[in-house]
Structures are given as structure tokens and as C-alpha cells.
Length: 284
Image 1: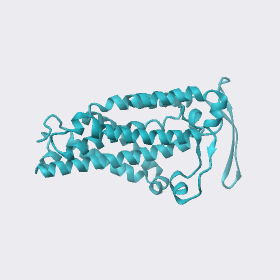
Image 2 (image 1 turned 30 degrees about the vertical axis):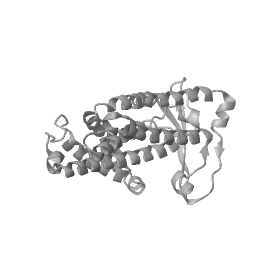
Image 3 (image 1 turned 90 degrees about the vertical axis):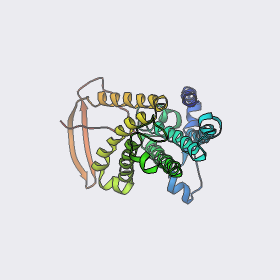
Image 4 (image 1 turned 180 degrees about the vertical axis):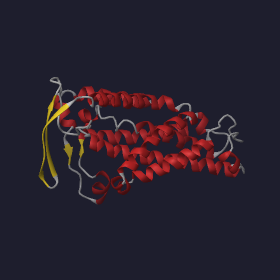
């Protein structure tokens, strides 16, 4: 069902390649100018973006209900309600974690299909990250409550040999990961991010640690994470190759106190660039 939903989005991308349909998908819908839209959504949505939000919200609800009410191990857990809730919320966090990597892939179908620019996709990345952190924290808190009911909390929290799950040695590792994740979330807050961008940027590489520990903690996570992670890696390779293009600076001067003019000439005659988002420049 997870990849079936992704395939539906890819199918929509092919359909949107038809010019009349593509124009409809990228048409903006005027929304009421109230506090919710101005504070949270911040701009009018395209038709495609609205379809994405409605469909994704519905899929999230279905995903949680499946693990909570249908899947036998979680829906009918013999260990009680807290065990069932903890496992269901944990699977919900896996969903948000896997989706974190889709918006940060700049070479993707999102702009073509939904009319969503890379800058706008970062909005989705931030909220996926927020929901991932909240569900992980809830997952963590529910397990602590479950262990507390059995008077196993101190032992299970820091001991490698878990009293309730002897085959899972990762809880101490995940406690440390959660602490690092909390620091990363705080540094991602807009005020910290804008004032201390280097600190935010370099600590964001802690996400690679999260990927490693999460895969060890939940062996089934690879099934959901493999696709987005591969797409992100391919995107990074494409951006690296594009970054090797050499340019000659023809003109570089200040035309206003807040504006610079830069004129470049590509040394590679086959160089192709489409304006509209970002151009990465590396000085050597």
C-alpha cells in the first residue's frame, strides 16, 4: 500500500505531462485570508498541491488505523493497550521519516506534477520533520509508560538486555538518538536557523546517524526508507555532477547596496540552465 500510493503519484505525473491537464494542476486556488492560511500554509495552493495534501492526509489516517485496528500484532497485542498504541505510533513515525527525503530531492516530479517549487517543498520537509519528531516522542513516551506499569522502566531504558523484549538491544541507543534529534529540531527553528545557519547546517548531518540507528531499531523500516533514500542519493549525485561545470566571471559589481550583478560565461558549450530556482556557485 505504501508504494502503491507512490505509484499513483507517478501515474499522475505522466498524466500531467499532457499540457491542458498540466496547466490545470498548476493553477492556484484562492483561499480565504485568515490566520490559519497566513500562518501555516502561507500561500495559495495549486490544484495539484491540494490533491497531494488531501490524498496524503487520507493515507496517513488509513496507515495509522491499519496498524492500530487491522494488523494482528499491534491491533490484538497480548501485552495490553499501551503496547498496541506504542507499536502503532512507531509505524506512523516510520511513514513520516521516509517522507522526509522526498521534498529535499531537487530533481523530482513535484514541480512538474503539482506546481510546487523547491522552496515550497522545504515547507513540507519541515512539517514532515515535525510530525516525525512528535510521533517518535509519543512512541518513546508510550513505551516508557508500558515499562513503568511493569516496574521495568530503569532497566529497559538503559540496559542492553531488555526485560520485555530480549531480542531488542537498541533502547539505550535510541534514547541518545532522541536527545540528538531534539537538539536538531531546536536548531531547525526559524530564529536559530537564520541566525546560526552553519550550526544548523552541520548538525543536520546528524540525520545520517538517525537513519543508521532507526534501521537497526526497526528492521522493517528499510522497506519504506529504501526508495526515498535512493532517490535522495541519486539527486545528490546529479547535483554534484552539475556542480563541476566551470564558469568564467565576465562582470561582478554592486549596483545597489543590497544588489549584486554577476555575469557568467560557461566554459562548457553544452551547458544548459533553466532559471527559476537556485544556481549554486562554488569558488575555487
